[in-house]
Length: 521
Image (cartoon, rainbow, N blue to C red; front, side, top):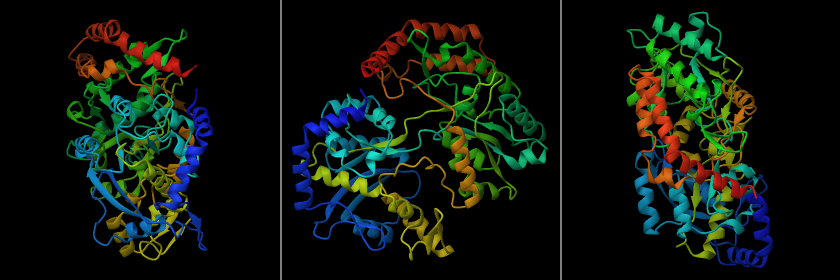
């Protein structure tokens, strides 16, 4: 049964409760229902008392300035809230979050890992409020696709509000490649796996970065926790060989893991070949994540890198042009295989889940949900991109801010988007450039890849066996890496695949299939 069908039933059964809560929200203070002002912006009703919301969220760079932040003050005024926000660096967030959940000191927390076993266990322990009955009346949050709600619900109920992202185009969607290097050697933009391999070989042979520093393809090693790898930032290549999106169901409805397919062997043979020719970063096995691969691309030494259209923005170009003023980036929307195979991962459609700890008084829950709904309002799209008109920008036209250099500096310092805690549903959310030509290219690419989504039927499910045994793929990962590096035979790889299939794999597949089948009823 879908989450929306269940939601309708819950709301119908609890209409009296919802009405009572709504009365509390309007009579006892908090974020009131927004009303339109003459200039078209929404503001909270003037009679409502201000609600203080203490929240913790993740940051991947410098946090917004804390002193007299005009962006924060503007949002607080329009939403009639007082925000006490903790911006925690991504590398420390997991540890801080564990402490925050235990401390019961916050009104709102971002679960950055999404719906994993830890989240599900916390839900079952009663750590968070059930928000199912609070969502239906929202204007903006309720616009999220049913798939996103299904991907984040637990036993048919909503315990957290996902931060929507595109269902297509996130993470490792497309191959980004140095257009100026292609032009230099009279190469067309590669469309197929073989054309890409040829371009990488040309980069290797001609060393456009100079000094022998050229890295044709930047990828990174994986730890073997979620799968064997051996590398990350390779989804387009995997799909070009017809490999499933992690899991698939065979003709008999039985689970098949990607590496159990013959297509995966063909993919590993390709990896082994390009590694032997020096087309993959020699540091790849020891790199720890996508950011380290991205750093090499932005440093101007890597010719290709798998990411999404967000990385063809002016921010990336600025970094690259510090090394090479002629740097240009092109995107290979969908990489085609030798038999026409191609695809893009159909992902969860969200990054992070907002939860309200059960220690928060029940009468405050609706006010917090209303605030999140307010931040997802259309007016805050402009706010997140332009800030306060007259302060961070002089205007907002055609989806882009009009800014002086000083306004741009203040915008980067105060970071208005950091206070917009909940995203509005937007299929073009990864089209982040402020340069019209780049943004148009980003949107065009997102339009293309939306036609090639490959689903993982078990994306929203979790295996307790896999969680309890984080090393289940490690031996396989190690021998696959050795195979790619030319240090092991295929027989050694197949032996590990067979051992997993007969052992942990059988249990993991059974657990996932049981959850999947339960939702089909």
